[in-house]
Structure formats: structure tokens, C-alpha cells
Image 1 (cartoon, rainbow, N blue to C red):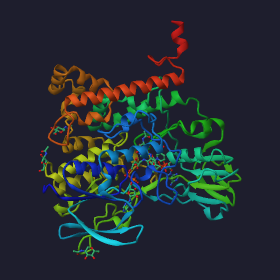
Image 2 (cartoon, rainbow, N blue to C red; image 1 turned 90 degrees about the horizontal axis):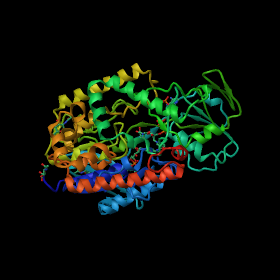
Image 3 (tube, protein in one colour; image 1 turned 30 degrees about the vertical axis):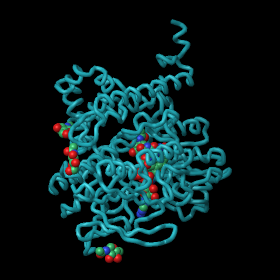
Length: 563
Ligand SMILES: Cc1cc2nc3c(=O)[nH]c(=O)nc-3n(C[C@H](O)[C@H](O)[C@H](O)COP(=O)(O)OP(=O)(O)OC[C@H]3O[C@@H](n4cnc5c(N)ncnc54)[C@H](O)[C@@H]3O)c2cc1C
Ligand SMILES: NC(=O)c1ccc[n+]([C@@H]2O[C@H](COP(=O)([O-])OP(=O)(O)OC[C@H]3O[C@@H](n4cnc5c(N)ncnc54)[C@H](OP(=O)(O)O)[C@@H]3O)[C@@H](O)[C@H]2O)c1
Ligand SMILES: *[C@@H]1O[C@H](CO)[C@@H](O)[C@H](O)[C@H]1NC(C)=O
Ligand SMILES: *[C@@H]1O[C@H](CO)[C@@H](O)[C@H](O)[C@H]1NC(C)=O
Ligand SMILES: *[C@@H]1O[C@H](CO)[C@@H](O)[C@H](O)[C@H]1NC(C)=O
Ligand SMILES: *[C@@H]1O[C@H](CO)[C@@H](O)[C@H](O)[C@H]1NC(C)=O
């Protein structure tokens, strides 16, 4: 690489910040554009029609797993950070790594052209309306995943006299006073909205098509649910997914079903939540927020909508009639897509690099949902889309690893496979998704995640970012036959233990030197892993105290006294 290649990152949400920091660290000359007046993206509650969290949103994985690998959350943040804490965290990340001076806020990218082997960006200063053009060698689009609100058609909606809206346009919490609200969809946003209107609305119906797995944020011992799955589990999952994917899905469904049953036993049958669909086609929710409202009867899961029969009446697919509905709110989520202004165009404008040539909500035409499948190798090596895909893994570290991988490719240290191989991956991936949808009966127009990447993604990332994790800690039978694992055990018992038995904090991705991204080295890694585990232990003890459990064992205190 020419060390001073000019890289532009569009969007300064979590992913844009992470990407910018990575490219900066690797010596690129970086520029960021952000149309909002602030960095941190959707984690600040916006009151306009752009997508954002609600003030009541809580992050769905623990801060111990969700952090960026070289920037742990402050100890004062909740175990599951609130939206405001998340936004603060991203702002301090920008400050800590001195990113702000590279980022132009209030600046919207209006057009992207590929000209003379460079990227020509037209940007608008949102406050003054001034337009300018700028050139870059490499382009990273990190403008967010959720773009087109899903508005599934409801039969007979034209007869409905009440209020109809999508959650993207919902901001207040005192709206819907004394109303009966019918929410379409029962997932994360439905939960947040139910919470937000719980002081004003009279009753909430949550209409869903096929059940849902409810999970608790904490296990009965007061531990965050995701901290139990440590490095050996990750290695096991990687091995199983590569070798026996169906068995792995079956196993996960069993485990999650068991956890769900234990935390939320005896759900009323008329809610229709169980049996829940497989994890292969539907994401569970962390249900702590909605549970009290389900228990009190304020919110009630019901079947899918068959049709609207008159101005206030709705018929469900199980024959039940809902009367006196005042508002219908779609909490049906979003299709992944990019606005036309962010689709890079070629010089001749005949062909573009639209990652969604088949329309919103389809599997993007990208390698590992990141790299374009363009016939021009210069384009493949200078354009990356972030946030168009994800593996089931907590928090931000997977995007950070993706940024490391892209940066390695752009630096010329690693290379992408040839176009045929990239296309073949895409074809196989698309076929696999379709086969899963068929096997597990996913509704054709639903949340069957077009963006979901198989765990194999981590193997590609391992190699391209250069994390050293697989070759040092993985292999058959969880490293049992891995000489490097044994050598680590022999040379540094403490580091070995922290990695194998500690929580899998994102620090683990920076321990080994593998000819890729910057590593901490063993000593610094130990220091950080020790800290990660100590903070975790303290939080567990505090939670146990709050729950009236024995702080050491997590068992009920009475049980201990009897001993
Ligand atoms: C309500 C909600 C809750 C979520 N909760 C979780 C969770 O609990 N756990 C989890 O892992 N994930 C969660 N997510 C997923 C979320 O997408 C990621 O956590 C992450 O914040 C996404 O960051 P991003 O940078 O991709 O997107 P964003 O934060 O949306 O940032 C994109 C930025 O690009 C800017 N932009 C867009 N167009 C332009 C343009 N033309 N020019 C300049 N700038 C532009 C936008 O203004 C925005 O600031 C949630 C998503 C939503 C919507
Ligand atoms: N941290 C948090 O607490 C939090 C809060 C809000 C949002 N988020 C995230 O933000 C994203 C958007 O969340 P979201 O809840 O708005 O959307 P979502 O997760 O995509 O869920 C959409 C819901 O609508 C249903 N639905 C979709 N199409 C439908 C149709 N045609 N007919 C009937 N029902 C339909 C889905 O059911 P099917 O399964 O049947 O399709 C699902 O219940 C998600 O990634 C979510 O994880 C997180
Ligand atoms: C870059 O794009 C702008 C806007 O379309 C255009 O006016 C300008 O001529 C382009 N630059 C070059 C060198 O073609
Ligand atoms: C958390 O939310 C993200 C994106 O919104 C989703 O992909 C992921 O599956 C969720 N995780 C859990 C544990 O609910
Ligand atoms: C991980 O990457 C290294 C190269 O950095 C490679 O030797 C190893 O085989 C990779 N492991 C997997 C599981 O892909
Ligand atoms: C990657 O490439 C850059 C630029 O050529 C070089 O400075 C750096 O040392 C390389 N890193 C690795 C790990 O090979």
C-alpha cells in the first residue's frame, strides 16, 4: 500500500467509528462523513424520522462480551448498558482514539462515483447546504443496516379508522392514552414500545406468527447469560458448525428451550409462544423488560392478523376477534438496503455496485456480506460495506474484526480470493439460507435474517485479520491435539487459564501475534484479561447481593444457612 492512501468512511455510528479507528491505526489517511450532528449513530434517541433506539432500549448482550477489544466499558456502566450508556461509550471511544478531528459531522454524502480508479464523493454541508466533491482511494460504507421499514400488507386495512404507524415514527411515551394498541410483530422493538406506552395505553396486543423464545438476561445465579459461553464453547461451535451444522442447531435449540422454560415456566397456551421457532430462522429476545407486562396482563401475545373487519375490529388467524382497537403499530422491523444515493455508480453509469440488485431484504450480492463482487479487481480491493451481515456473536467485536480484515486486504498484507471463488461462496451461501428457510418453515416475507452469516465467517476473519486464535486455541476436541495450546499451557499457565476458563472478553482477539492486526502481546493481554475478569466477578457479586443470593456461590441464602 501507499501508506498515505486516502480512506473515507461514511457514517459515524458504532461501525463507522470502529472502522475509522482501525484504518487510522494502520496508517491510512482517514476521513469520516456523518449526516447527523453527532457521532454514535442510532444509539442516541433521535426525535426525527431517522432510525434510533428508544430511550428505554437496553443492549441485548452484556458489556463483558459486547465491548470493543481494546476499549472496555467503564465499570460504572450497567451489565446490560442502557442506550444512553451505549452512546456515551461510543463518544468516549471517539475521544480516546482522537477520531473526532477526522470526522465531518452535519455532512451528508449525496453521490458516489467511480472515476479514474478513485472514488468521487459529492457531499453536502447539512447546515449551509454547500455542496463539494472529494476524492478517495478507498471507500467504506457504514451507514447502518436498517433502512427500509417493513410494512407487511394487512388485509382490509383500508377499513381501519384508527391510527396506523411504524415504530420508526414512534418517539413519545405518553402517546396512546387509554388506547387499545395492536402491535404487529413481537420482537425487540415491540418489547421497547410496550414498555414505553405502559403508563398511558390501556391494553397492548402483540400479534405474532409463530411463537418466540423468551430468554432471561441473568441466570438464576446472577450471571449474565452470555458470559457462560466462553472460549471452549466458541471453539466447539466453530467446529460443529463447520462439520455438523444440523446437529449444532438441534443442540442450541434444546439448550435455549431449556433455559427459556426454566426462566419462564407455564406460559399460557393461548399466547401461542411455544413451541418457538428454531434459532436457525428466528432470534430469541431477552425478555426481562416485557415479562412484567405479560404477567400483569397489560400486554397479551395473540395470533397473526387475518384481516381488519371494520373501523375498530380485527380478526386473527385463530378466529379470535379483537374489538375496540385504537392504534395499529407495525413493529415489523426493517429490510436491509442502501439508499440510491449511497450506491456507488460507475463512470458510464450503466452498471452500479448496488449490493441489493434483487431489492431490499434480499441476501446482499457481496462476499461475506462485505466485499463487492465486481469484475474490476481494483473495485473489489477498495470498497467495503459494513453492517450488511453478522454472525450470532455478542456485540461489536465481530465488526472490529471485519475492519481489521478489510484493512489487512487494503494494506496488501492479505488478499481476497479470486472473483470466481467469491461468487461461488455467495451462491452456496444463498442456497444454504434457502435450504434452512425451507427446512424450518420460515415465513417467506419475515425476519428470516438475510444478513445472518454462518460461523465459518470467523475462520475467514481469523485468517484475514490475523487473530491467531484458531491456531493457538482451537482444533480437534477443543485444542486437545494442538501443540500450540499445550505450549501455551506449559509456558504461561496463567494466560492459558484466563483464556480457557475466564470470560471470553473481546481482549482474547488481541492476544496472539499472527502477522495481522496489532496484538497486545502476552503480558499486556494478561493484565487486561485479569481486569476483565475482576470487573466481571465484582459485578456478579453485586448482582447476587441485589437478588439476595449467596455472593460466593450464587445459591439462595437460606439453603446455605441450613448446611
Ligand atoms: C433499535 C435498535 C436496537 C438495537 N439493539 C442492538 C443490541 O442490543 N445489540 C446489538 O448487537 N445490536 C443492536 N442493534 C443493531 C445496531 O444496528 C448495532 O448495534 C450498531 O449500533 C449499528 O451501528 P452502525 O454504525 O452500523 O449503524 P448506525 O448507528 O445507524 O450509524 C450509521 C450512521 O450513518 C449515518 N449516515 C447514513 N447515511 C448517511 C449519509 N448519506 N451521509 C453521511 N452519513 C450517513 C447515519 O446518520 C448514522 O449515524 C440495534 C439496532 C436498533 C435499530
Ligand atoms: N437491544 C434491544 O433491545 C433492541 C431493541 C429494538 C430493536 N433491536 C434490534 O433492531 C432490529 C429491529 O428490531 P425490530 O424488533 O424492529 O424488528 P425485528 O427484530 O426484525 O422483528 C420484527 C417482528 O415483526 C414480525 N414480522 C415481520 N414481518 C412480518 C409480517 N409480514 N407479518 C407479521 N409479522 C411480521 C417478525 O416476525 P417473524 O419472525 O414472523 O417474521 C418479528 O416478530 C433487530 O435487529 C433488533 O434486534 C434491539
Ligand atoms: C466528480 O463528481 C462531480 C459530481 O458529479 C462532478 O461535477 C465532477 O466533475 C467529478 N469530477 C471529475 C474529475 O470528473
Ligand atoms: C441483539 O441484536 C442484534 C441486532 O439487533 C441481533 O442480531 C442479535 O441476534 C441480538 N442478540 C440477542 C442475544 O438477542
Ligand atoms: C486461522 O488463520 C491462520 C493464519 O493466520 C491459519 O493458519 C489457520 O488455519 C486459520 N484457522 C482456521 C480455522 O481457519
Ligand atoms: C502490512 O503492510 C504494511 C504496509 O505495507 C506494513 O507496514 C506492515 O508491516 C504489514 N503488516 C504485516 C503484519 O505484515
